[in-house]
Length: 73
Image (cartoon, rainbow, N blue to C red; front, side):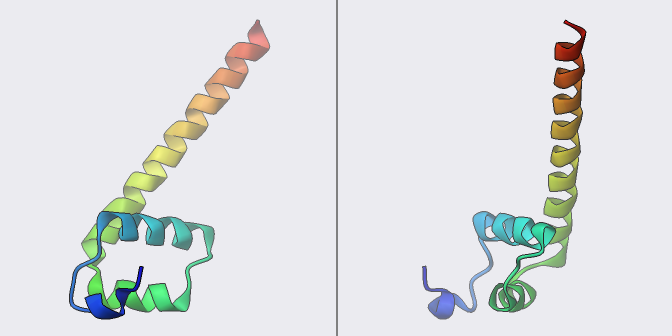
């Protein structure tokens, strides 16, 4: 997908999710980071980051509970 023609369009949810996940893993490219700062809204990235963190913690809690449940059997 070539975003060169879409410089004035806001980021899609998919683009923002990919950026948040890439940033969380530390593999965000400079080109995408520049795109995020020029076309994205900070509040959207903050909300997605908080939501992703909460989801990650809930998944970890679920995995730990499952492991503990299986260990008691």
